[in-house]
Amino acid sequence: MLLLAGVEAKAECPPLNALYPATEADWPARRADIETLLPACLQSAEYFALLGAARLNTGDVSGALEALERALLIDPNHGGAQVDYAETLYRSGQLFAALELNGALLARADLPPTLQAPLRARQAVWERDRRLFSGLVELSGGYDSNLNGAPSTSEFALTISGESALYTLDPQYQPKSGAYANARVAGSYAVISSEGRHDLLASVRVRNSAGHESDLVQADWRYGYTHDFTLPNATLLGWDITAGTSHLLFGGSPLYSVLDLRSRLMLRRESGCSPLLEAAAQYQRYHGQSVISGVESSLGGGLQCQSFTGRARLDLAGGYLMNEASDAVRPGGDRKGWRMQANWQYRLAAGALDLGASYARLNDAQGYNALLDYGARRSVSNSQFRLRYQRLLGSHARLFTSLSHLRQDSNLVPFRNKDTVLELGLQRTF
Image (cartoon, rainbow, N blue to C red; front, side, top):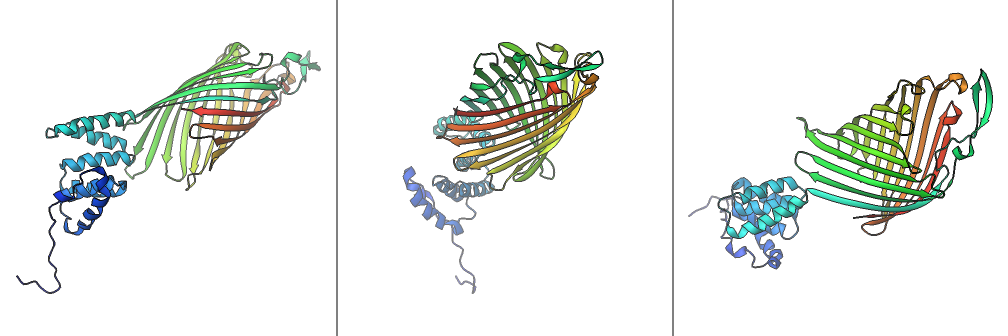
């Protein structure tokens, strides 16, 4: 047969039986031989299935995905390619796609009996990856300049019979400073599905100090649901809703309980800044003084910014606050104001540095008390600063130290206070 000048004979894809390895250890050597046949086997589903298996078994997950997808384009029902493709999806982090494909394989009527057991076994292992449990134990100690949260000024003026008189606060209500020991236990359980993620978190914290008047016990739990939506223009929109409670005992007696509900909508971006909107409502009940209880609601927005390297993160948030009195005779009545906060985190080689700051201001709608500054309306501003450094001690333990400062200012002297806390501790996760 004569060939036209400049046209080469097209090679045919040879039989592939001899290229299948006898053992797992043979894959690296066989892969080199398999790769050389690529130009001649561009239309062979069997070849691309074998090439995908060779790449998968030599650690080339991205190359295996490419080859196995080509095999399934040529023959969508190729069983061998589907088996390895499910494994490749799992190794590349596509858990739900792997589970779906593996489930479809188990439902095939032509599935060889020898594959039933291994496919069921890996389905069970992959299903366990949908459920995540983690725990934490933390022990720490430090120094607190205001353990009981008392006013920073011991002398203040009271308006009696229309005149101002200077009074001294009882010593038991003045600031008490000292060392303390802190213990915290926390746990979280998450269930992940293709529809969303469910999280349940719970924690208990105990603080002991000299004299025990400022001992503290706090118990919290929270449930969260997260779901991502892909819009027609390929924009990823994340929505989450959380609900929970917090209970605090101070000095052996219940101080307050909080019921919290919040929802957030975020425009997710892989890098740079992701804008968000958040709405929240919180019922605050003070057990010893129920008259000051109320419902605080907020509406705001912010940015979550991630560096291109992933080492630095900056969160910015701000919003409007409104606190409605549960009792019509609450001193000061309803309150309105605003809040701003910023948190910066930077990951180091063996740890992380966290820096946080916030500022909030609330103004009462009515005069607080006729005895204080002739019944003036109260205005309160609250500023906080926190610096924390943690260093890894192996894969599950970390040493941390933190410094925080809180300052509350007000036009009414009894509501001015400040607090500085220095803490050192050890944390263990499991």
